Length: 301
Length: 337
Image (cartoon, rainbow over all chains, first blue to last red; front, side, top):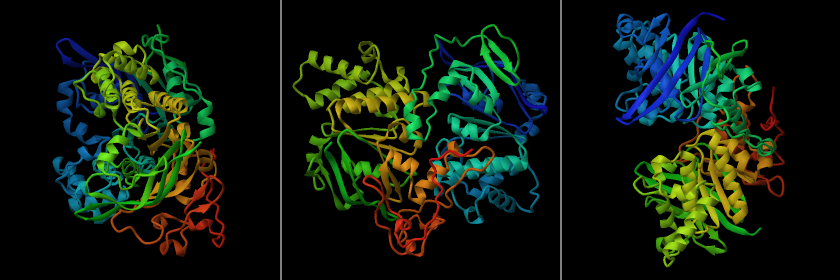
């Protein structure tokens, strides 16, 4: 495999609710993402997926552990300060909720051009507006939308604007937190195709966070499974689906709804019992590039 | 099985400052007691408006323009809000998408279930109410019901809250249960449990369920019959097997084919071209025509009638007319690759 773009080492994040209560959203998570790879993270709500994305984007400070991006330790304030322009332009984030992610009082053209203006990047195509138009055509929207406001657009179109804004910086790492969760099936298919197409064209590395396994199966190269802040399994996508090892992964796969009535009704999902499979230990390589959380194991994914 | 709900040629419009929004257009279907009917379609296609018009929970800006709704043989189309209040809960009740917002965060869940019980049986004494609440909570699969009653919504998980909401909905022993995206806010692992519970309860109590969803996995798990809606109309209706294994409407085929599950590895997903139309001044003819690669000339002029394919299976597409050319829609229910 190619070289690492992102490496997460023993990352933990704890939210302090009040004096008496803390929530461990990430607990000793380690993995690395290769250049040009689509890396999926799945897990149920509250398992720490979004916290992970936020830590990777420097929106949250990890409680413990380190994150290396292109060799820069981004959990270290000094290194972040020294490399700020690079870090801020080459990493981009797309949120699930495109309603709150886009400023409702800005026109689409301004939304897409804003990152370029902020970073004082001279638009290669003459004007910021021309640049916005180019990016929009890239994600499948025509120029007539340039002067619209986000509330005038449908969910799928808004998500396209968010993608266009992120890609205007030509990022090397794109982090997407549930980008298709709130979209309809047919629009979801359009956006997934767009991601695939853009990734093939730009070659950016993609950290894709989702809860829908069929989406991950379709899009990703490698998948990490999380539960209650722990990473329990990391494997290439085909192997994870054909040979899941951790009991939680098995439960998750068995619960994946299949759009086929005869098949779907003939199966009963296995229920994950946390007592039967304690979430302790370390990731161990069971076969090449396939890591599972096992008691007493020790290896780095 | 008897017919419990009959909707005939129902049209509902919302009157907004931008014009008349035709949310439900000429919808006809019936519901048998003890069956689960899934209503699927993209957002804005009128699924929720259809349910709300049957429950008569529409806002003041909406009006039933034509058609009739009959429940257990009684025509309720012209019922006032006062008449309806007697029916709601007893005859039908509803579960909403997000259980976190459906419950009062400041009241223990047991009291909220008790409240629903008391509404239906105002003279019930305290002890009987308590027993009924425990019975309901056990029915919906909440373990350790006694202790759970004392807890507030924030200390229960989403799945448990949805079970509480279901207990409240079942308090009046309704004959029809409307479930509007009941599992969208829940995790996949919990989703299957709630769907199985819905089926189990519906079989035990003989309740008919209308399940509104956009997730075909949910439909496959829980539905006996499926109605596919597009732009306010039912475009195809049939048993789950009809719809999944033998879809006849190009829209149904398109939706099924766009699911990542059916995608061949390495190939782009199939997409239905274009966007759903706005429901202000919908185009004449078949609203799906501009997105339909097989659209015929007549599709742009006249809305297709329902063609009968089998005893249970109906679809509204001109392609089913005997004069139409034969096309291969490449049925979506077969997994490729």
